[in-house]
Length: 269
Image (spheres, rainbow, N blue to C red):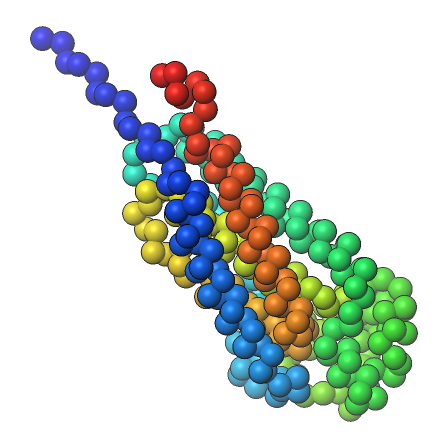
């Protein structure tokens, strides 16, 4: 007696977008409201201690490790129940492409459009100008030329005898971060990542779905770390994180439509 082939695995429809938003949006907004606590952080902090070191590494995760966070998030989306409309390889590529498109595109627009229009100096630049260590006004500092010219000048300032007390990594971070301040690119990227993967994950029957709710608090930590490091103000991170939530949810919506919602071909089967 011949064995009947196994029936095809059911392909669960993604959770309705309205239901996804009713969970993802409040989770992101709750973390965003906590970002407002940044207005209570004093502008002049001791950046030579352990708090500054911790803030550096939290901030590091919001940019240098962001690709790794995105890859882990994409792998998590593959660990779901039910059948698939596309192969795991196509889904992995599609999620990573959407992640890179919206976070990368938004970050570039922020860096080369919004920041250049606003032209807000970084808080540490204002602090160095107030103490007389910068040796020029903020407008003169930003008129030096490109970022490399500013870095040369800043490296001299921060290695002089009268330099401020900074952790070595924080000092080097100031030297690297010589662009304009408003809005915060780290805050945008972290909250965009959190909103993107939270919304996509809530759309799917994931076994490890609770892990996604770690992302908004992590994004909050990235925002507050930027203030502690002196490279952004509370206003910078508040707007950056709000933009990140909007772009992240929009990116998740479009990625979900392409990868997970049924096509006319699927409906005919």
